[in-house]
Amino acid sequence: MFVPLHDENTLKSIRFQWVTILLIALNVIVYFLETARLDEVAIAGFAIIPRELFDTSLLPIPVETVGPQVPERLTLLTYMFFHGDILHLAGNMLFLWVFGDNVEDAMGHIKFLVFYLACGVFAGLVHAWIDPTSEIPLIGASGAVAGVIAAYLVLHPRVRVWVLALKAIPLRISAAFALGLWILMQVVMVLLPQVGPVAWWAHIGGLIAGAVLVVFLRRPGVPLFDKGIGAGA
Image 1 (cartoon, rainbow, N blue to C red):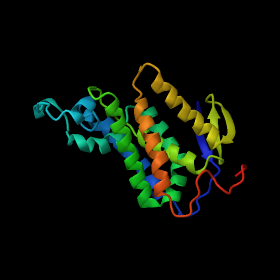
Image 2: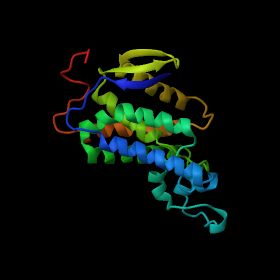
Image 3: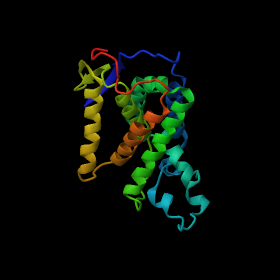
């Protein structure tokens, strides 16, 4: 799999990607707060737990046996700012750093923030719908970032992206190839027996939301699929 490093795609409508940077900073701050102050039980209070999200008949758990709690519906927002480990955080934030600025540029600051959160919420819902009896906590920005990836691919498939292949080889390839391969892997993984901690269906949910929402939230006149731009852009 490729690790994205940089895209050759300058900003056209905004001067700086303030929302992208804000989201990265918030994720980093929350991660260091959770590692310094919270244990697994406390973090689960901010995570999506499908059975608790859908089953309102659950008996309340005594406060002394759990950590901080937020209303179950609110976990659709809070879950996306917590991460399991530093690699989980770094991977998500790297993709957001490389591709988020141009999606923000295509939408504007406020609409991009709404877009990002909506993708994360829908990703969490898809994950919970697939296995509504699961009691495994879901955390991470992967679903929201998947929405950013899908939007970028819809907007800029022809843009060249520098990636690191096999953790050592720098390559300059099209976004369509790099991101298309990443998306293909997500589809393949949901078709395989679900093994391991990765919530692949959340990625699929984020991808669907991102691909649809970008069509409606982009600025007037922003083309799709690099329409009118040469293949070497």
